[in-house]
Length: 168
Image (cartoon, rainbow, N blue to C red; front, side, top):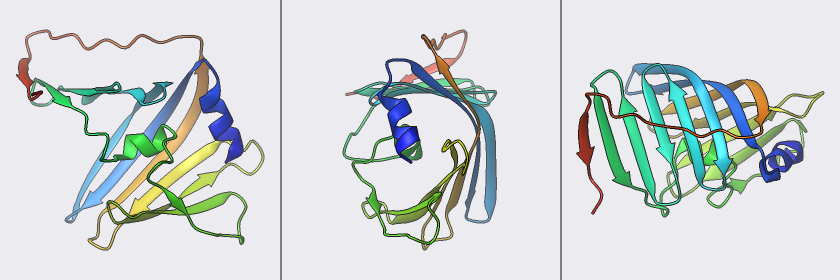
C-alpha cells in the first residue's frame, strides 16, 4: 500500500486505466476508461460515455449519452469513489487485517461503505478497490494498467451539448 501512496506524492501525473462495475438495485453499470490523478483533490476520468473533471472546488461532467455538460460545486464534506481512488484517506478507517499483507480492509462510516484495497504481491501496485454497503450496493474498480506521465492537461469541449450550470 505504501508504494501506491508514494506514487501519489511524485510531481508527475498518475494515469490509471480502470474498469468500474457498479451493482445497485439489481442494475449493473460498467465503464472502462482512464483516470488521471493530476494533484491532490484534482483528477480527471475519461471514457467513451463520460468525462469527469474535478478540481478543488468544481466538478464538470460531460455525458455523451444524453449530450449534456453539467457544472456543479464540489462539496468537500462528501466523499465519492474517485476520491478514494485518487488517494484521499481522510474519510477512510483502515481495519486491522493481518491475514493478507496485499489486502487492506477499510470502512467509510460517513457513507456506510466497507471495502478493501488489493495490491499486486510482487510489484505492490494497486489492482482492485472494492466497496459495498448493507443496501446491496456494490462497486469494484479494477486497475488494469498504471503509468506515470510528465504532464496531462484535460479539456472538456462544449461542442453542441446542452450546458447546465448548478453552481451557486
